[in-house]
Length: 157
Image 1 (cartoon, one colour):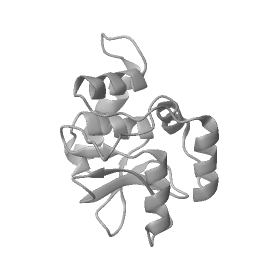
Image 2 (cartoon, one colour; image 1 turned 90 degrees about the vertical axis):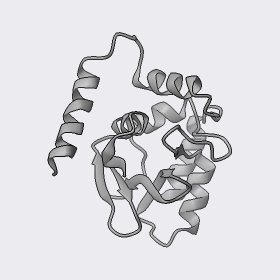
Image 3 (tube, helix red, strand yellow; image 1 turned 180 degrees about the horizontal axis):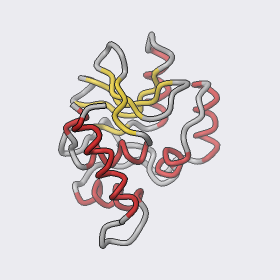
Image 4 (cartoon, rainbow, N blue to C red; image 1 turned 135 degrees about the vertical axis):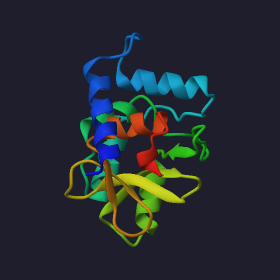
C-alpha cells in the first residue's frame, strides 16, 4: 500500500470516527453536497429492486451501498460531480454489467464518461478502480469510496 493511500485511508477513518460539526449520516452529507452542487439525483431504489439486481449480478452489495441507494438511486441522465464522477443508477449497473466481458467487476461509478470505472470485485472486500486491466483497491468500503469521490482524492485518478 502506498503512503498516499495509507494517508487517505487514515483520513477517512478519522472522518467516520469523528464526524464533522454538521450532524447526520454519511449518506446525508453526500446527498446534501450533491444537491448543493445541483447534481441530478435519482429517486430512491426499493429493497426489492436492489435484491433483484443482486440476483441478476450474482453479487451481494454491502450494507452501506444499500443505505445510499435506498435514499438515492444514483445520478440521473449520466449527470456527474464537479470532478466528473458519475454514480450509476441500478438499471445502468445492470446494463453495463450485461455488456461487459469481465463478469467479476461490478461498476457503480465512472470518471469522465467511462475513462475509468469504480466498483466492486466479486469475492474481494473493498472498492476498486479499473483502467481496463487489473482493478486496484482504493477504499475499504463503499462509503469511503463515496467520500473519496466527493473530496476529489488523488487516489481516484
